[in-house]
Image (cartoon, rainbow, N blue to C red; front, side, top):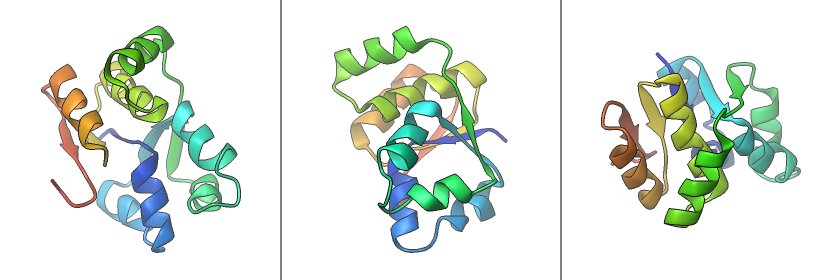
Length: 123
């Protein structure tokens, strides 16, 4: 199963030392390069940076249509990582996406009805 996540679930689960819950539930996780940069590069020294970098079950994937990411971001005022996550889900036909931003989840569901969107709280 292809599962994509944005930065918030990675960071928040790392804060409570539970990042491996994603591994236990899904096995492997895909993140767009923008999420990796946000969590690991820009977040150096913060929760999630070292954990995500060390997690061999989290795979980075480059979004092909970066123009669509920018369009989505400008039209809906969403964070770059959330937009890249939504577009990556479409590009790879992921079955599930883990998003904790309500606006991003609504947009993800609107963009493509065929995948399941969940938050850490399951709403």
